[in-house]
Length: 200
Image 1 (cartoon, rainbow, N blue to C red):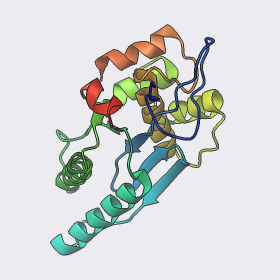
Image 2 (cartoon, rainbow, N blue to C red):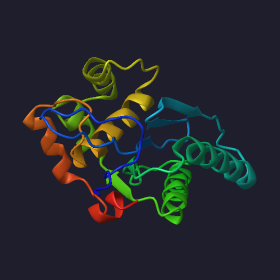
Image 3 (tube, rainbow, N blue to C red):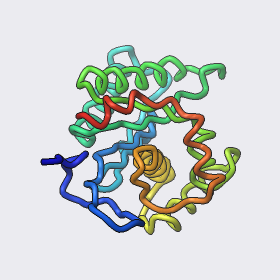
Image 4 (spheres, helix red, strand yellow):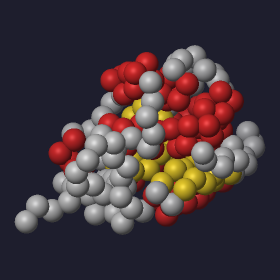
């Protein structure tokens, strides 16, 4: 007996006749200190937090701990987590270390759970959404609302949804058809070993 590739209850949309594979559990994460966007099969959400430049080390640690805990709670057990790559490390500022620390804290926690992680650049995310890697977040938000019919309250959630859509497309289960120019963005991403994803 042939077992299904994935074991989620929601069938993937197919464009050809034949058996339907079950939709993979893929999470999209737009990691941020002020508003981390999360997209899963259950929908999208955002984890907002506030901090001050004069916050103590303990306060900054607790803030990152809170964000990480919420992310792991929302993501649960997935086949693949698609995360936007870190940006801004060359830009001076008091939050540079915190942004990097939060990114690695979440990535490390996912890897420790044996969840494969894909790293997608902001340029690739924008290109997949709009066809242009130079598109601003507002354009990505509008594209996500239009293509997927999603009700999105923030560009953080839109970015997370696009990241999830890219992961599903890489697994040959696209949420919607996209033009070839958009799909080309998948080639520039750092994908994990495919077998590690499909055998979870």
